[in-house]
Image (cartoon, one colour):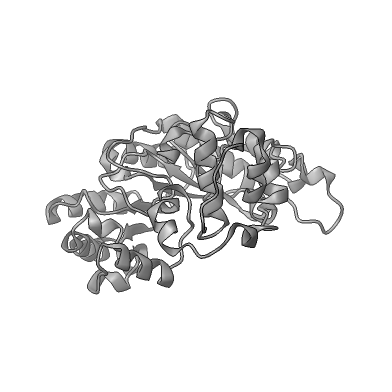
Length: 331
């Protein structure tokens, strides 16, 4: 386990100042591909997307987290829809088990693959044998626009029988028996009850439907606290590392250096575009030369909505390609 002083930013601090937390969890996006194209997806996943994480990359993140945070790193496997690449999903879990890295904390799914009780039971027994701690099943009006609710109910029932109720998490349980309509009215009710981050595809029509903040209301909302305090990252199938749920803002790439080196070198005050977000927040992006010509929306849902909308503008102009990407997050 590393000492917090091994981070370059932390070494500049005075006692008591907030520091970069040691990362102890990672969400591995096996792919951007998904049978669904949910209106709130942070990573803009869908049927037209691609990518597949190599086994060694996934195991490398596991090793790095153990070096960073000790013997109990938390890994969840997600996407996209990881079950679309079942063989790769199992290959990664088995490789981690063989190396003694510990069990997977969570596997996430929308249940689109569970087209029969037999298929569901066979795969769940495999996850049980490999000691996967939790199966997280998406259940909300966004996913039910693409996955029949009866299919999700069947998967949840069989998962509870095989894994036990303590190892099955339905997000959200209340919609399993009382689903909302898969239209804007249902979407708005869902995010009122369970607020979401307006990033990725959520920064499109969904954010505009609930936008209620003028640009000047987002002044002074910087991101330094979030950048410092988040203890987890997401890694996409191409090796891009995103902090927390800030999809499309690249801290580094695992093909160039391991995760522990990305953490030790992370300095939000010296990291180009990230510095602007840390000090001024998303509204500061409007002052970048490359943002010249950006026309503000009449209203925004929150600062993440503003940030994503501005970053889309920058990506369309090929600005900051080392920090803003991949294109999958912006389409």
